Length: 148
Image 1: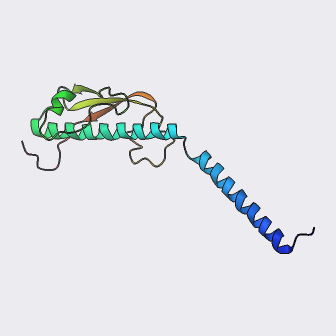
Image 2: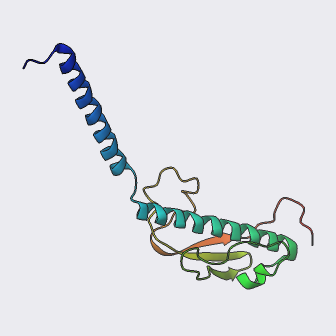
Image 3: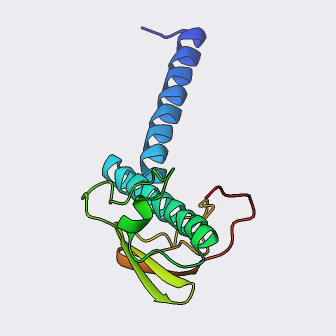
């Protein structure tokens, strides 16, 4: 049996479309992280967000009181404070330590290295490797009016 020209064109189109679909799926798998890696990335982003919020809360406390809080527990007793003080995965508290004057550090346990992540908005200061990482910060006066 001889195939018509139309049948050959249809078969060719089907093969090309199937090849493009397979290539797109393989490319997506290669470019995207596995679900487990994506989960770890999101947890690390949450940790950084939590630390940034804690740093802002310390700034507010510094502005109100003129001193650093002695602990995260003291900070959490402040009126209007609702930030997370614990790791979203382990439930362990973030670490906070006064170094001197207005200098302190915040620490957390991270799952991944952010060195290769180009699209992070916090890629400079909040970059981290896996494991326990600490960030040294200085409390600053907040530029808006804060009620006592």
